Length: 154
Image (tube, rainbow, N blue to C red; front, side):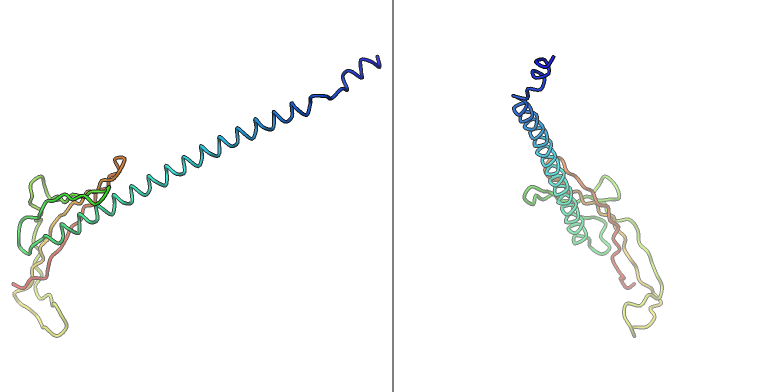
């Protein structure tokens, strides 16, 4: 009986088994951490591309606002590339190039202090401008803006 107990108490080789087990656990945790950092990088790049597309769309809206002429019925439609990003300007009111929405007349609106009352009133021209921005990996953003130009004396 004593000899049988000595055979079970022999611990030769257990250090090798424990070392292999620890190495497998370190390998699994290393693969998990590498995979997680790769996912975080993809999220960061996606955010950067989406933000760049938003700023490209904002640039398109600003170009559209700069092309609005007082009382003119049309806006310029354009598309431009800025590095990996591009923007396009379109009319927001319909499918054609007409971005003019309406006029709003306000009687007596005063432009500055001390100018007095204008009985003829002033007119504000309202426009709709749409800017679209695109970036890498199909990142897209669209901004719709309504612009009032005025006051213009009558």
